[in-house]
Length: 117
Image (cartoon, rainbow, N blue to C red; front, side):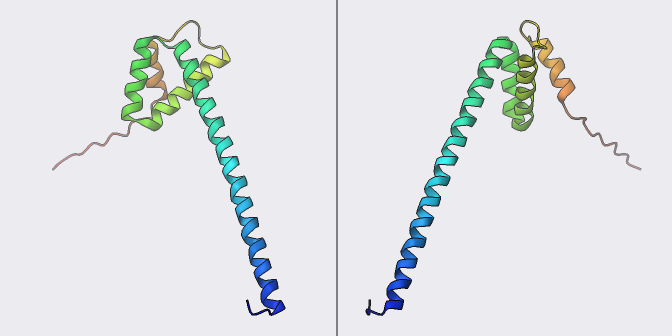
């Protein structure tokens, strides 16, 4: 530096600002890690509930649905987990019950009638 007090003060302010930014980014990183960890715990808990309340056939059907329609599959998983945790599921859900549940949760299909003249 040239020894000018204004330049030194400006440099000090820049360093302070950079340090604040580093601290802020570090804090956001910790929050993001905590959020990621909480989400992983919730997913593991959901999977445990599904394993407990679904038969193998129902789980295979749900996995097939999730492969073809990921968003719908996730919605069904959440619904089944909510039903199980609220106690509205007696025993285990078999493949036929899963099929009925999928029909109920499936959005209405739009059909188009095309007529040629």
